[in-house]
Amino acid sequence: MDVNITFLGGSGTVTGSKYLVRHNGKCLLVDCGLFQGYKQLRLRNWQPLPVTPGQIDAVLLTHAHLDHSGYLPLLARDGYTHAIHTTPATRDLCAILLPDSGHLQEEDAAFLNRHQLSSHSPALPLYTRLDALHCMRQFKVHSMKAAFEPLPGWRATFSPAGHILGAASVLLEVGGRRILFSGDLGRPDDLLMNPPDAPPVADTVLIESTYGDRQHPADNLLKELGPALQRLAGRGGVAVVPVFAVGRAQMVLHAIGLLKAQGAVPKSLKVFLDSPMAVSTTGLYQHHLGEHRLNAREVNAMEHGATMVQTPEQSKGLARLHGPMVILAASGMATGGRVLHHLALHSSDHRNMIILTGHQAPGTRGARLADGEKTLRIHGQDVSVSAEVVKLSSASAHADGNQLIAWLRSMGHAPDKVYVVHGEMGAADHLRQRIEHELRWHASVPEHGGTLAA
Picture 1: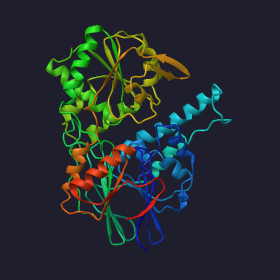
Picture 2: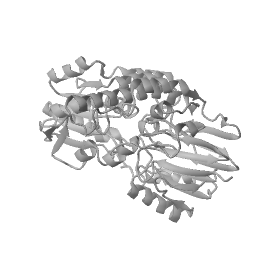
Picture 3: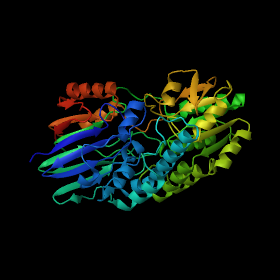
Picture 4: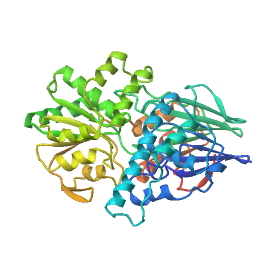
Protein backbone atom coordinates (compact mmCIF):
# COMPACT_ATOMS: atom_id res chain seq x y z
CA MET A 1 0.00 0.00 0.00
CA ASP A 2 1.25 3.49 -0.84
CA VAL A 3 1.96 6.12 1.80
CA ASN A 4 -0.47 9.05 1.93
CA ILE A 5 -0.98 12.18 4.02
CA THR A 6 -4.31 13.69 5.09
CA PHE A 7 -4.11 17.39 5.94
CA LEU A 8 -6.33 17.81 9.01
CA GLY A 9 -5.01 21.30 9.90
CA GLY A 10 -2.31 23.79 9.05
CA SER A 11 -3.61 23.98 5.47
CA GLY A 12 -4.49 27.48 4.27
CA THR A 13 -4.04 28.73 7.84
CA VAL A 14 -1.19 29.03 10.37
CA THR A 15 -3.00 27.08 13.10
CA GLY A 16 -4.35 23.63 13.83
CA SER A 17 -1.38 21.68 12.44
CA LYS A 18 -2.28 17.97 12.08
CA TYR A 19 -0.88 15.68 9.38
CA LEU A 20 -2.15 12.09 9.31
CA VAL A 21 0.23 9.66 7.60
CA ARG A 22 -1.23 6.29 6.58
CA HIS A 23 0.56 3.15 5.38
CA ASN A 24 -0.31 -0.50 5.45
CA GLY A 25 -3.30 -0.11 7.76
CA LYS A 26 -1.40 2.05 10.31
CA CYS A 27 -1.99 5.74 11.11
CA LEU A 28 0.58 8.17 12.52
CA LEU A 29 -0.24 11.79 13.36
CA VAL A 30 2.45 14.48 13.05
CA ASP A 31 1.45 17.40 15.30
CA CYS A 32 -1.88 17.76 17.03
CA GLY A 33 -2.64 21.48 17.25
CA LEU A 34 -5.53 23.75 18.10
CA PHE A 35 -7.13 26.04 15.55
CA GLN A 36 -6.94 29.70 16.60
CA GLY A 37 -8.10 33.06 15.23
CA TYR A 38 -11.32 33.31 13.21
CA LYS A 39 -14.40 31.78 14.84
CA GLN A 40 -15.01 29.47 11.87
CA LEU A 41 -11.51 28.07 12.40
CA ARG A 42 -11.93 27.72 16.16
CA LEU A 43 -15.17 25.78 15.60
CA ARG A 44 -13.09 23.08 13.89
CA ASN A 45 -11.67 22.23 17.32
CA TRP A 46 -15.12 20.87 18.23
CA GLN A 47 -15.56 18.76 15.12
CA PRO A 48 -14.61 15.07 15.26
CA LEU A 49 -11.53 13.96 13.33
CA PRO A 50 -12.10 11.70 10.29
CA VAL A 51 -10.43 8.90 12.26
CA THR A 52 -11.31 8.12 15.85
CA PRO A 53 -8.45 8.78 18.29
CA GLY A 54 -8.37 5.06 19.08
CA GLN A 55 -7.48 4.33 15.43
CA ILE A 56 -4.30 6.44 15.59
CA ASP A 57 -1.22 4.32 16.34
CA ALA A 58 1.40 7.00 17.14
CA VAL A 59 1.86 10.77 17.46
CA LEU A 60 5.00 12.78 16.63
CA LEU A 61 5.17 16.32 17.98
CA THR A 62 7.47 18.93 16.38
CA HIS A 63 7.21 21.52 19.17
CA ALA A 64 5.14 22.82 22.07
CA HIS A 65 3.23 25.81 20.69
CA LEU A 66 -0.51 25.22 21.08
CA ASP A 67 -1.20 25.42 17.34
CA HIS A 68 0.90 22.23 17.16
CA SER A 69 0.25 20.56 20.54
CA GLY A 70 -2.96 22.00 21.98
CA TYR A 71 -5.36 19.29 20.75
CA LEU A 72 -3.41 16.46 22.48
CA PRO A 73 -5.44 16.46 25.74
CA LEU A 74 -8.65 16.05 23.73
CA LEU A 75 -7.13 13.30 21.59
CA ALA A 76 -6.05 11.37 24.68
CA ARG A 77 -9.33 11.92 26.53
CA ASP A 78 -11.27 10.64 23.53
CA GLY A 79 -9.37 7.39 23.23
CA TYR A 80 -5.77 7.83 22.04
CA THR A 81 -3.71 5.53 24.27
CA HIS A 82 -0.28 5.27 22.58
CA ALA A 83 2.91 7.30 22.94
CA ILE A 84 3.40 10.98 22.08
CA HIS A 85 6.97 11.14 20.75
CA THR A 86 8.92 14.40 21.06
CA THR A 87 12.13 16.04 22.30
CA PRO A 88 12.94 16.57 26.02
CA ALA A 89 12.49 20.36 25.94
CA THR A 90 9.17 20.06 24.10
CA ARG A 91 7.93 17.65 26.78
CA ASP A 92 9.01 20.12 29.49
CA LEU A 93 7.23 23.00 27.74
CA CYS A 94 4.05 20.99 27.12
CA ALA A 95 3.95 20.20 30.85
CA ILE A 96 3.55 23.98 31.33
CA LEU A 97 1.48 24.93 28.28
CA LEU A 98 -1.13 22.17 28.09
CA PRO A 99 -2.46 22.32 31.68
CA ASP A 100 -2.58 26.11 31.37
CA SER A 101 -4.57 25.76 28.12
CA GLY A 102 -7.06 23.46 29.87
CA HIS A 103 -7.32 25.85 32.82
CA LEU A 104 -7.99 28.83 30.51
CA GLN A 105 -10.70 26.89 28.69
CA GLU A 106 -12.36 26.04 32.00
CA GLU A 107 -12.17 29.72 33.00
CA ASP A 108 -13.62 30.87 29.66
CA ALA A 109 -16.52 28.41 29.96
CA ALA A 110 -17.21 29.52 33.54
CA PHE A 111 -17.18 33.20 32.47
CA LEU A 112 -19.66 32.52 29.65
CA ASN A 113 -21.95 30.63 32.02
CA ARG A 114 -21.70 33.28 34.73
CA HIS A 115 -22.72 36.02 32.33
CA GLN A 116 -25.06 33.87 30.22
CA LEU A 117 -23.10 34.74 27.07
CA SER A 118 -23.13 31.29 25.48
CA SER A 119 -25.68 29.82 23.08
CA HIS A 120 -24.92 26.48 24.76
CA SER A 121 -26.25 25.75 28.23
CA PRO A 122 -23.98 25.16 29.90
CA ALA A 123 -20.89 26.22 27.94
CA LEU A 124 -18.25 23.49 28.28
CA PRO A 125 -14.46 23.65 28.00
CA LEU A 126 -12.92 21.84 25.04
CA TYR A 127 -10.89 19.98 27.67
CA THR A 128 -9.81 20.51 31.26
CA ARG A 129 -6.55 20.99 33.13
CA LEU A 130 -6.91 17.42 34.38
CA ASP A 131 -7.25 16.12 30.80
CA ALA A 132 -3.95 17.86 29.97
CA LEU A 133 -2.18 16.44 33.03
CA HIS A 134 -3.36 12.94 32.11
CA CYS A 135 -2.05 13.15 28.53
CA MET A 136 1.43 14.12 29.78
CA ARG A 137 1.87 10.52 30.95
CA GLN A 138 1.93 9.43 27.30
CA PHE A 139 4.95 11.59 26.35
CA LYS A 140 8.06 9.69 25.31
CA VAL A 141 11.21 11.73 24.64
CA HIS A 142 13.97 11.22 22.08
CA SER A 143 17.24 13.09 21.65
CA MET A 144 17.82 15.21 18.57
CA LYS A 145 19.37 13.28 15.66
CA ALA A 146 18.72 9.86 17.29
CA ALA A 147 16.54 7.65 15.06
CA PHE A 148 13.72 5.66 16.71
CA GLU A 149 10.74 3.54 15.66
CA PRO A 150 7.36 5.09 16.59
CA LEU A 151 5.79 2.00 14.95
CA PRO A 152 7.39 -1.25 13.80
CA GLY A 153 9.03 -0.55 10.44
CA TRP A 154 8.48 3.23 10.72
CA ARG A 155 11.64 5.24 11.47
CA ALA A 156 11.69 8.85 12.73
CA THR A 157 14.46 11.34 13.48
CA PHE A 158 14.18 14.78 15.10
CA SER A 159 16.61 17.52 14.05
CA PRO A 160 16.93 21.07 15.48
CA ALA A 161 14.61 23.64 13.88
CA GLY A 162 15.49 26.73 15.95
CA HIS A 163 12.24 28.64 16.65
CA ILE A 164 11.73 27.74 20.36
CA LEU A 165 13.21 25.34 22.92
CA GLY A 166 12.88 21.76 21.73
CA ALA A 167 11.50 22.62 18.29
CA ALA A 168 12.37 20.03 15.66
CA SER A 169 11.94 19.05 12.07
CA VAL A 170 10.96 15.39 11.65
CA LEU A 171 12.20 12.95 9.03
CA LEU A 172 9.76 10.04 8.75
CA GLU A 173 10.88 6.97 6.78
CA VAL A 174 8.07 4.57 5.90
CA GLY A 175 7.08 2.39 2.96
CA GLY A 176 10.24 3.28 1.06
CA ARG A 177 9.48 7.04 1.33
CA ARG A 178 11.43 9.73 3.20
CA ILE A 179 8.99 12.43 4.34
CA LEU A 180 10.36 15.61 5.95
CA PHE A 181 8.10 17.78 8.14
CA SER A 182 9.82 21.13 8.63
CA GLY A 183 7.84 22.03 11.75
CA ASP A 184 8.15 25.74 12.49
CA LEU A 185 11.57 26.92 11.34
CA GLY A 186 13.48 29.56 13.26
CA ARG A 187 15.65 32.31 11.85
CA PRO A 188 19.38 31.84 11.33
CA ASP A 189 19.88 35.25 13.00
CA ASP A 190 17.52 34.71 15.96
CA LEU A 191 18.45 36.64 19.13
CA LEU A 192 17.86 33.60 21.37
CA MET A 193 17.71 30.36 19.42
CA ASN A 194 20.37 28.50 17.46
CA PRO A 195 19.77 28.33 13.69
CA PRO A 196 17.89 25.34 12.22
CA ASP A 197 19.98 22.42 11.02
CA ALA A 198 20.23 21.94 7.25
CA PRO A 199 17.49 19.55 6.10
CA PRO A 200 18.20 15.90 5.26
CA VAL A 201 17.46 14.60 1.77
CA ALA A 202 13.79 13.62 1.44
CA ASP A 203 11.31 12.47 -1.21
CA THR A 204 8.47 14.65 0.10
CA VAL A 205 8.76 17.88 2.11
CA LEU A 206 6.08 19.68 4.12
CA ILE A 207 7.38 23.24 4.55
CA GLU A 208 5.85 25.88 6.82
CA SER A 209 5.02 29.26 5.25
CA THR A 210 4.01 31.59 8.11
CA TYR A 211 6.20 34.34 6.60
CA GLY A 212 6.40 32.82 3.14
CA ASP A 213 5.39 36.09 1.44
CA ARG A 214 7.67 38.56 3.23
CA GLN A 215 11.18 39.38 4.32
CA HIS A 216 12.22 40.43 7.78
CA PRO A 217 13.63 43.97 7.92
CA ALA A 218 17.37 44.58 8.05
CA ASP A 219 16.95 46.29 11.45
CA ASN A 220 17.34 44.04 14.45
CA LEU A 221 15.08 43.91 17.48
CA LEU A 222 17.25 46.23 19.57
CA LYS A 223 17.09 48.99 16.94
CA GLU A 224 13.28 48.72 16.83
CA LEU A 225 12.57 48.30 20.52
CA GLY A 226 15.10 50.82 21.89
CA PRO A 227 13.57 54.01 20.43
CA ALA A 228 10.05 52.87 21.35
CA LEU A 229 10.99 52.34 25.00
CA GLN A 230 12.90 55.65 25.03
CA ARG A 231 9.69 57.43 23.92
CA LEU A 232 7.70 55.57 26.54
CA ALA A 233 10.12 56.42 29.35
CA GLY A 234 10.17 60.06 28.25
CA ARG A 235 6.41 60.46 28.64
CA GLY A 236 6.04 58.25 31.72
CA GLY A 237 3.71 55.78 30.04
CA VAL A 238 2.90 52.12 30.47
CA ALA A 239 3.78 49.67 27.70
CA VAL A 240 1.56 46.60 27.46
CA VAL A 241 3.36 43.87 25.52
CA PRO A 242 1.25 40.86 24.50
CA VAL A 243 3.78 38.01 24.38
CA PHE A 244 3.79 34.33 23.66
CA ALA A 245 4.84 32.72 26.94
CA VAL A 246 7.27 30.46 25.13
CA GLY A 247 10.08 32.18 23.23
CA ARG A 248 8.78 35.69 22.63
CA ALA A 249 8.59 36.66 26.29
CA GLN A 250 12.18 35.55 26.83
CA MET A 251 13.41 37.25 23.65
CA VAL A 252 11.90 40.60 24.70
CA LEU A 253 13.27 40.26 28.25
CA HIS A 254 16.74 39.54 26.86
CA ALA A 255 16.48 42.49 24.45
CA ILE A 256 15.44 44.91 27.21
CA GLY A 257 18.37 43.69 29.31
CA LEU A 258 20.79 44.34 26.45
CA LEU A 259 19.30 47.81 25.83
CA LYS A 260 19.71 48.73 29.51
CA ALA A 261 23.29 47.47 29.49
CA GLN A 262 24.01 49.63 26.40
CA GLY A 263 22.41 52.68 28.02
CA ALA A 264 19.84 52.87 25.22
CA VAL A 265 16.96 52.83 27.73
CA PRO A 266 16.99 53.91 31.38
CA LYS A 267 18.16 51.22 33.81
CA SER A 268 15.36 52.40 36.11
CA LEU A 269 12.62 51.36 33.62
CA LYS A 270 10.48 48.86 35.54
CA VAL A 271 9.72 45.57 33.76
CA PHE A 272 7.11 43.01 34.84
CA LEU A 273 6.54 39.53 33.44
CA ASP A 274 2.90 38.88 34.26
CA SER A 275 2.45 35.29 33.14
CA PRO A 276 3.06 32.31 35.43
CA MET A 277 3.54 30.19 32.32
CA ALA A 278 6.19 32.54 30.90
CA VAL A 279 7.90 32.68 34.32
CA SER A 280 8.09 28.87 34.40
CA THR A 281 9.27 28.74 30.80
CA THR A 282 12.07 31.24 31.47
CA GLY A 283 13.43 28.84 34.10
CA LEU A 284 13.73 26.07 31.47
CA TYR A 285 16.46 27.94 29.60
CA GLN A 286 18.91 26.92 32.35
CA HIS A 287 17.92 23.25 31.93
CA HIS A 288 18.45 23.26 28.17
CA LEU A 289 21.70 25.18 27.72
CA GLY A 290 23.14 24.39 24.31
CA GLU A 291 19.76 24.57 22.54
CA HIS A 292 19.94 28.37 22.52
CA ARG A 293 22.55 31.12 22.25
CA LEU A 294 22.60 32.21 25.90
CA ASN A 295 25.12 31.02 28.47
CA ALA A 296 24.20 30.39 32.11
CA ARG A 297 25.12 33.94 33.16
CA GLU A 298 22.96 35.49 30.41
CA VAL A 299 20.00 33.26 31.32
CA ASN A 300 20.39 34.35 34.94
CA ALA A 301 20.40 38.01 33.85
CA MET A 302 17.24 37.44 31.80
CA GLU A 303 15.51 35.81 34.79
CA HIS A 304 16.43 38.72 37.07
CA GLY A 305 15.75 41.50 34.56
CA ALA A 306 12.06 41.67 35.41
CA THR A 307 9.75 41.34 38.39
CA MET A 308 8.09 37.93 38.01
CA VAL A 309 4.35 38.18 38.64
CA GLN A 310 2.71 34.91 39.69
CA THR A 311 -0.60 35.34 41.52
CA PRO A 312 -3.79 37.07 40.30
CA GLU A 313 -3.47 39.43 43.29
CA GLN A 314 0.03 40.48 42.21
CA SER A 315 -1.26 40.98 38.68
CA LYS A 316 -4.12 43.19 39.86
CA GLY A 317 -1.64 45.11 42.02
CA LEU A 318 0.14 46.36 38.86
CA ALA A 319 -2.89 48.61 38.25
CA ARG A 320 -1.86 50.69 41.28
CA LEU A 321 1.62 51.40 39.92
CA HIS A 322 2.58 54.38 37.76
CA GLY A 323 4.77 54.47 34.67
CA PRO A 324 7.13 54.42 33.11
CA MET A 325 6.95 50.64 33.09
CA VAL A 326 6.68 47.66 30.77
CA ILE A 327 4.22 44.81 31.36
CA LEU A 328 4.76 41.63 29.38
CA ALA A 329 1.73 39.35 29.55
CA ALA A 330 0.23 36.47 27.59
CA SER A 331 -1.38 35.81 25.20
CA GLY A 332 0.72 36.99 22.27
CA MET A 333 -2.25 37.71 20.00
CA ALA A 334 -4.37 39.16 22.84
CA THR A 335 -6.89 36.35 22.50
CA GLY A 336 -7.11 35.70 26.25
CA GLY A 337 -5.19 35.67 29.51
CA ARG A 338 -3.97 38.45 31.77
CA VAL A 339 -2.94 40.77 28.94
CA LEU A 340 -6.61 41.56 28.34
CA HIS A 341 -6.94 43.17 31.77
CA HIS A 342 -3.88 45.35 31.10
CA LEU A 343 -5.16 46.33 27.65
CA ALA A 344 -8.56 47.23 29.11
CA LEU A 345 -6.84 49.41 31.72
CA HIS A 346 -4.16 51.13 29.60
CA SER A 347 -5.30 51.27 25.95
CA SER A 348 -7.24 54.53 26.22
CA ASP A 349 -4.31 56.71 27.41
CA HIS A 350 -2.22 58.32 24.65
CA ARG A 351 0.92 58.27 26.84
CA ASN A 352 0.81 54.49 26.88
CA MET A 353 2.00 52.01 24.30
CA ILE A 354 0.95 48.59 23.00
CA ILE A 355 3.88 46.66 21.56
CA LEU A 356 2.99 43.78 19.22
CA THR A 357 5.81 41.27 19.06
CA GLY A 358 5.01 38.85 16.26
CA HIS A 359 2.58 37.33 13.78
CA GLN A 360 -1.03 38.27 14.59
CA ALA A 361 -3.38 35.68 13.11
CA PRO A 362 -6.41 37.15 11.30
CA GLY A 363 -9.44 37.37 13.55
CA THR A 364 -7.46 38.05 16.74
CA ARG A 365 -7.44 41.26 18.80
CA GLY A 366 -3.75 41.54 18.00
CA ALA A 367 -4.52 41.63 14.29
CA ARG A 368 -7.16 44.31 14.83
CA LEU A 369 -4.67 46.42 16.79
CA ALA A 370 -2.07 45.92 14.03
CA ASP A 371 -4.65 47.12 11.49
CA GLY A 372 -5.17 50.35 13.44
CA GLU A 373 -8.64 49.74 14.88
CA LYS A 374 -9.57 52.32 17.50
CA THR A 375 -11.78 50.15 19.71
CA LEU A 376 -11.25 46.71 21.20
CA ARG A 377 -13.92 44.40 22.55
CA ILE A 378 -12.66 43.05 25.88
CA HIS A 379 -14.80 41.07 28.34
CA GLY A 380 -17.98 42.26 26.68
CA GLN A 381 -17.02 45.97 26.78
CA ASP A 382 -15.74 48.30 24.05
CA VAL A 383 -12.38 49.83 24.99
CA SER A 384 -11.03 52.83 23.08
CA VAL A 385 -7.47 52.64 21.76
CA SER A 386 -5.52 55.91 22.06
CA ALA A 387 -2.23 54.31 23.08
CA GLU A 388 0.58 54.23 20.52
CA VAL A 389 0.62 50.84 18.78
CA VAL A 390 4.13 49.64 17.88
CA LYS A 391 4.53 46.64 15.61
CA LEU A 392 7.92 44.99 15.98
CA SER A 393 8.74 43.51 12.60
CA SER A 394 12.05 41.99 13.72
CA ALA A 395 10.85 39.95 16.71
CA SER A 396 9.47 37.03 14.73
CA ALA A 397 10.73 33.57 15.63
CA HIS A 398 9.86 32.27 12.14
CA ALA A 399 12.12 32.14 9.09
CA ASP A 400 11.05 34.58 6.35
CA GLY A 401 10.55 33.76 2.67
CA ASN A 402 14.22 34.08 1.72
CA GLN A 403 15.30 32.00 4.72
CA LEU A 404 12.76 29.28 3.91
CA ILE A 405 14.01 29.09 0.32
CA ALA A 406 17.63 28.98 1.53
CA TRP A 407 16.78 26.14 3.94
CA LEU A 408 15.16 24.13 1.16
CA ARG A 409 18.02 24.83 -1.25
CA SER A 410 20.52 23.51 1.29
CA MET A 411 18.88 20.09 1.01
CA GLY A 412 21.17 19.47 -1.95
CA HIS A 413 18.82 17.10 -3.77
CA ALA A 414 15.39 17.95 -5.17
CA PRO A 415 12.45 16.15 -3.54
CA ASP A 416 9.67 14.67 -5.69
CA LYS A 417 7.13 17.04 -4.20
CA VAL A 418 6.79 19.87 -1.73
CA TYR A 419 3.60 20.61 0.19
CA VAL A 420 3.39 24.18 1.47
CA VAL A 421 1.57 24.25 4.81
CA HIS A 422 1.12 26.33 7.97
CA GLY A 423 0.53 29.71 6.32
CA GLU A 424 -2.34 31.95 5.33
CA MET A 425 -3.38 31.31 1.74
CA GLY A 426 -1.51 34.33 0.35
CA ALA A 427 1.74 33.47 2.14
CA ALA A 428 1.51 29.77 1.25
CA ASP A 429 0.83 30.40 -2.43
CA HIS A 430 3.58 33.01 -2.66
CA LEU A 431 6.10 30.52 -1.27
CA ARG A 432 4.76 27.82 -3.60
CA GLN A 433 5.43 30.06 -6.60
CA ARG A 434 8.96 30.85 -5.38
CA ILE A 435 9.75 27.14 -4.91
CA GLU A 436 8.55 26.37 -8.42
CA HIS A 437 10.26 29.34 -10.12
CA GLU A 438 13.54 29.56 -8.15
CA LEU A 439 14.19 25.93 -7.20
CA ARG A 440 12.34 24.32 -10.13
CA TRP A 441 10.70 21.88 -7.72
CA HIS A 442 7.10 20.72 -7.89
CA ALA A 443 5.12 22.41 -5.07
CA SER A 444 1.45 22.64 -4.11
CA VAL A 445 -0.73 24.01 -1.31
CA PRO A 446 -2.90 21.19 0.08
CA GLU A 447 -6.62 21.63 0.76
CA HIS A 448 -7.90 21.28 4.31
CA GLY A 449 -9.08 17.70 4.73
CA GLY A 450 -7.47 16.58 1.48
CA THR A 451 -5.45 13.38 1.11
CA LEU A 452 -2.35 13.31 -1.11
CA ALA A 453 0.37 10.80 -1.90
CA ALA A 454 3.51 11.12 0.18
